[in-house]
Length: 163
Image 1: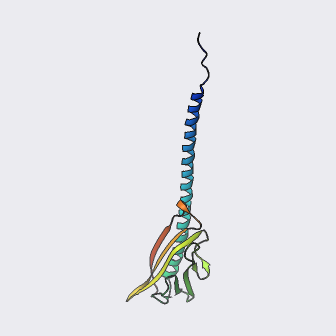
Image 2 (image 1 turned 30 degrees about the vertical axis):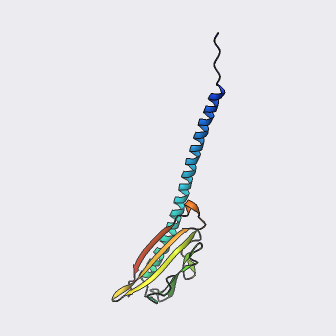
Image 3 (image 1 turned 180 degrees about the horizontal axis):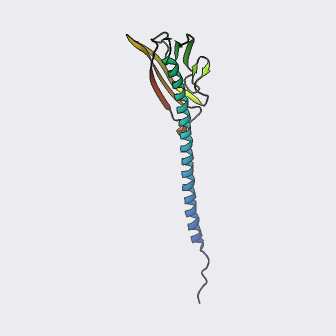
């Protein structure tokens, strides 16, 4: 007599459950890594845009500045100058660290989602050559921790035209 073997044994069912459980864990981990990478990429992009925007504004205004005073500046967190219209203007690094930002007068050049962690604004006068201003900014996303706390640095040198 032959037995009817149309069902599955308990061992076969357990093996299938283990294999599908393993696959589910691998797939969910890869999905989490992908989402984390996307979030980090978006954060870096936002910080880069803010730092580049602040530097672009400073470059544009300093190229046409009438005078930077004093040059060299004693405090590398503040740069005072007179614009092409004769108005007194300054750039400053405020609360550098976890809540830092770059300001022009009293207005922010970086938004509150970005923390400026390092900032340097240095003016150098070089004999017959026009003065130069070196700008160095480092920022990260405010409140970002772990792998999402990527740091973005940018630097430029501006040669003043109006001297």
